[in-house]
Structure formats: C-alpha cells, structure tokens
Amino acid sequence: MFPRFLAVLLALSLAQPLRAAAQDLSGHGGPVRALAVLEGRLASGGFDQAVIIWDPAAGRALRVIRWHQGAVNALAALPDGRLASAGEDARIALWGAGEAPEAVLEGHSEPVAGLAAAPGLLASAAWDGTVRLWTLATGEARVLRGHQGNVNAVAFAGGALYSTGQDGTLRRWEADGSPRTIAEFGLPQNALLALPDGTLASAGVDGTVRLVAPDGAVRELRSGPRPVIALAASPDGRTLAVGTIGGSVGLYALPEGRLRHTLDGPGLPVWSAAFAADGQTLWTGGQDRRVRRWNAANAQPLGPLAAEAAEPALAALDPHGAEVWRACQACHALRPDAPPMAGPHLYRLFGRRMGSVPGYAYSERLARGDIVWTHETVADLFTRGPDVVTPGTRMPVQTVGNSEDMAALLRFLEQATR
Image (tube, rainbow, N blue to C red; front, side, top):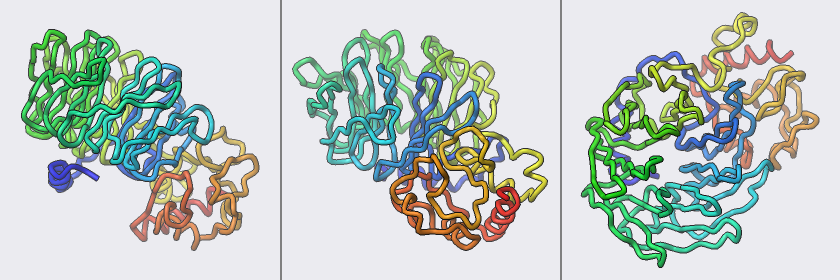
C-alpha cells in the first residue's frame, strides 16, 4: 500500500536492470521496510509481515515474529530495551522477550508509517492524517491533528515532537497539542530524522534532503532526481545516510553536507537504513528483500547479515540446491545439535510430521501437526507460500517460483537432512 506517486515511481524503478551484487542474502520474503538497532541485536521489518531479530555478530536470525496483519512499516528501539513495531494493519506492538506483544496500541484507522521513541513516550505517524503521542506506562494517546493527508514520519528533537508527510510541511507540536508549521517544502516528504545537535533532516520526493537547524535555517542536500525514502545518522551526527527509491545510498559528511561516498547496491529501492552503535557499520534494507552491511568509513560491503554461501561440504551435495537453500539458512539449521535458531532444525525432515521437533515453540497452526513433510508437501509450501499453506505461521513468506530451483532444493534437502 503506497501513496500513488510512490507506486508509480516504484514501478518505474523495478523496470531497471538488476545489477549483480555479492552480498545477497536475508531471511525476509519481501522488501525490508524498516530497521532498528537494539543492544547487541538488529531488528528488521518487512512487507512480508515479519519482524526478524538478528544476532549481527553470528549472522543469524534469533526470532521471527509474525503478528502483524500486513506489511511492517516502522520499527523503533525503546529506551527501556524493548522494540516497537507498526504497520499496514494500523496497530503498534511493544515487544519484550516473549512470543506475544507486551502491549498493543490501537487507535489509528490507517497504516502507521513512522515511529519515534523518547523516555516513556512513543510517537506514531499514520495515513489517517494524525500523529499520536503515546504514554507507554498507560497506553493512552493524545491525538494530534493538523496535517493535510498522510503523515509519513515523526521525530523527537530538543524535547519537542516533529512530523512531516504528504502535505510537504514540517510541524512542531506544542505542549497544548496545537501544531506550529516550521517549514513548508511544497512537495511530499517521506522520512524525518533528528540529528544529535537538534537539526532535523527531512527527505522529499524530489530527491532533496532539507536540513532544518534549531534556529529555523534551512540547507538542502541534493541526492539526485529519485525520491529519498530512507535516512539514518551515525551516533555522533557526522555522517548522514540517504537512501533513494532508485537504489543509491549516499553518505554525507556533516555539518558541511559533502557527499563522501555512494554505496554500490543492487539498483532497487532502499527502504531503510540504520547505523550500528559505534557508527562504523551501516545496515540497509530494501526491495531486494535483503539486509546488507557496509563499512561506513569506506562504503565497502561487509557481506550479508546471514552467511554468504553454504558450507563447502553442503554445496558439494548439490551446488544448485545449496544455492537455493541460502534463502532458508538464516533461520533453519540442518542438524539437531546446531545452536538455537529462529526456526526449527530440519534434520530428518522428510517423513516428519510438522510441529514435532521437541522443545521448539511452534505457532498454533504448525503445532496442529496435520501435515507430513514429503517432497510434495514441501514443494507445495514453497509454491503457494507459508502464509497460504500454514496461515498464522511465524515463518517469513518465501516462495520458489522456478521448477528447476524447486527440484534442486528438494534434492539438496533429501541429502542434507538425512
């Protein structure tokens, strides 16, 4: 679900040829729409309705959360260590260590597009034209009205709450809930970010990032003709990452606004970006369904979040099948003695009843155990998709549309899971 102008531009961008890239693996079954850095972990949210919690050091998924009934559009790390997620279903969920959300915040009537956190508070921007300021201790919200059309992003800066959206305005919300227009850009704005010095970065459909200083002065960074849809700043505020619908990511030195590097990505929309706590690593997520890691100092790729390729011994079983398997290995192990992962191990998969691995916390649907895994049922799972074959599963939506790929994957699993 996109505003009309984004839908048209997205269609145009997908017509561009896909450039080859070495780092091309993730666990999502759809575009990666949001990223959030947690303590020692990374969270990603996708159009496949999934939130994946990653262990970046080990390069594997720790949890796959499938709770939202629609695309996950926004994530926010809360000061108390929890994670907030929101999306197309107009709901906001607060996550701790459990399998169910600790709290659900409801009130928006249209998709939630942006989140921002402050101690004890969470702000949400939605396509119902409102901003909501939630008190986390009570779950109550103030409804803030003033924008005309979709509100796409919110940010806290200098103790105040700001928002921007389809009407091209940047607004500050006063203590009494009234909006004050800080700037009018004349074109829809897609993203908003607060820098450590209180400067606000607002990203527009015209490919321009506006830097609004606390005193109201505005500077422009021109990234190109394509809409900017992702912003991230290093913790020290000296590097700004700018992602576009055309697939480029520019790294700008601040405060001078000089372009230092351009990341060489796959040429598809980059929907999300986030810096690690040390400011040395940048993660990006986009239309190609992958989370990528970059060295923020020299713009070189550090490889995918999950392992780049199957182990040599596995690849020797069936090279083609091992390549297809790469989309699964972020969440599943092949042996029962492997460390815990987001999904159950697949040892002795064929002939096994679904939901039967001891000690694994299955979703309610898989726990029924009414499917036996055979070549035919596994093929059906990846042809129609886990969301259709096993509705309610927490498994990311992965499909295999090529018959040769499917045959190779089944051959590989037959050998590797014995």
